[in-house]
Amino acid sequence: MHYTMKIGFGKSDITPRVGVQLAGFGPFRNRHSNGIRDNLWARAIAFEQNESKIVIVSCDLTGVVIEITNRVREIVSKETGIFSGAIMVTCTHTHSAPSTGTYIGWGEADPPYLEVLPARIANACIDALNSLEEAELSHAEVPCEGIAVNREYDQPFDHGNPIEHFLTDDWRPDKPELTDTTCHVLKATRNGEVIGFVSYFACHPVVCCEETFKIHGDFVGVATNNLEKKYPGSIGLFLQGAQGDVNSCVAHYPEPESMQALDIIATRYASAVQNGIEAAEPVSVDEIVNHRDIVTFTRKDWGLDKFRTLLAECEAFIHQPGATDSLMKDRKVLRMEMVYAIALREFIAKAERGEDLALPTEIHGIRIGPICLIGSGFEVYQATKNLVLKQVPREITLLVGFANDRCGYAPDDTVAERGGYTVDMTPFICRQLPYANIHKELAKAFVWNAKNLG
Image: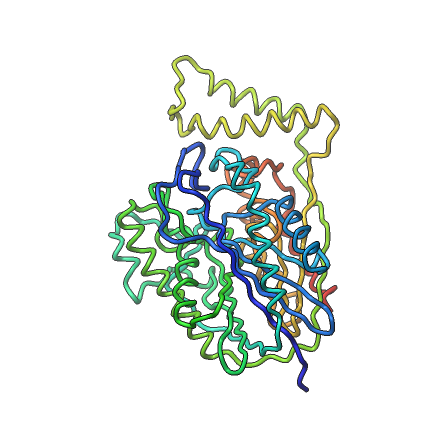
């Protein structure tokens, strides 16, 4: 049976001015941009069927907090009349874009940029809604290899090997099964012409490193730019998957090597997506469904006494005789201890005021016929994705990271049992308390959301 559906695309430039700090890679690096390799974009796709409308926008940014998402929704809803909760704001997680707030020490946010950013993102959504016309949707899942490695369970960064080791066409990680080995592609066509596409894959787009200072969307941004040229007039979105424990095969090399690898890995990804565009088969979309859950996840039972003890330990290191802001001693870095100290002081102040430290976030599901997208603000791990997919009967279910919020890592149970930096301290960077049981609780929330999508 044929169902009529409308699809529209929009695109808006969200490139900051040169000089803003770039996000990621470590505490207080003062990593100011010194040029623009590629512009940053907000790219949106809108769907309409039976008067139901949804919009998904993908931004070449590290992530956005819920306050930015809600401001985007407010602007788009006011301009177009769409239900604000039917707008999903996602990010690719490039580390070659400006910080967008809340991270402590991982790139100073630029207030003028943040002030105008929501309207610039909203423009892409509005354009997508205004361009809605009848179109055909197709889907493919195709091989996508030679890009990713699981950094928790494999050892990708063997700098004993020259970078060429990772850039040969036949390079594969030791444990490919711990990464995505395929990518999903959605293609929209009108009168036989490609008007836009969506690609989905799980991998930190962090080919470039702490020693690179150019603004761009890393390998997924470069790949999408190239594909848009391959299909003139099209607009392409990238949706990030379960990449909490997955990195690109090249990271943390010096700038010349990083920039060389950037184009090679982008070409690998673009080739896989192009194969998906060419192989995509039409899908029958019977209905469009949108469902959001507001969820508060359990945190570790760390009260005021714990906070004060941890803060005293941080301050003892920071204030030791002869300390400088570049101090490194006994595997501790003063700048990192300062991140923890700032977070702990905030926790103590809030706890003393009686404020709840476990903040809610969104789980946002969108179903387009047989295709389910379930988004969260977390960096989801592969094991969590695998647990969810076993419990969701719908064949095409994609867990989208960095959707609507930015909540930090959601480690799986094996990583959580190790404790330490990833589990107990990195949440502080996002001004969050460590999670108590995030693997199972997040999986349960994803499954519940999927069931509500029908």
